[in-house]
Length: 279
Image (cartoon, rainbow, N blue to C red):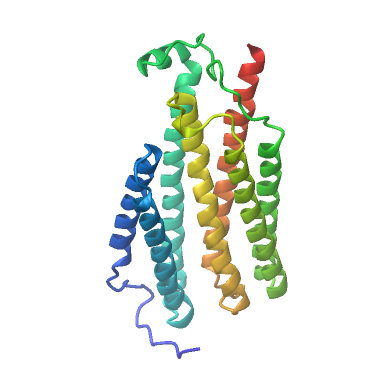
């Protein structure tokens, strides 16, 4: 490991980096490409945007790992700032999902007004609209709920093991968590492939369903990659019981993903199916 530089003050002045700008461009391309693909246009732009997002994640995380592990720039005071930054980031993500949830609840609670506003034929004033065959909430959605709840336990196991100096337990917990995250993504892909309705059905239910669950699925993929990076770092011995904010941030993010899914399962899968049963 490289020799630690002599730091005259406890703060970290970040070096100029191109990755925030590259990441913003990549996110813009991914969003524009996704819209084009959803309207049946060329999907090459979404592929370029996705590859750029993955590249940005790799190089940006690489730089942060160097700062934290090899340059020893993440002092206790710097780590406080990192914690505040991660909390604010998660708060901004919460606002994203608040918007998506309200996009679902607005037509669900005021079905007639929403359906007329979207210029779609009246479907009886019920939600979901007549003709929409929703998922059985206690099929794949419930299985995915159990998987995510279990993954929340295993990532906590990994974090606790690290704090106790048990590197082997940390690696085992992270390995199981990454596998559970990948399993969730595979099951959601299967769910989408067998759905009775598609994003291109030009109905508000399909749009709100796929936007909310798909955006969450994207977060699961990002969180799984985040934890996979922590797994490799744990195997390389980058973390210590007192210096492991990378793993802590990944655990916070993963718990946020778990909580959002509980709301999705309850409100969209379970409550939505209950509304159909009631009618």
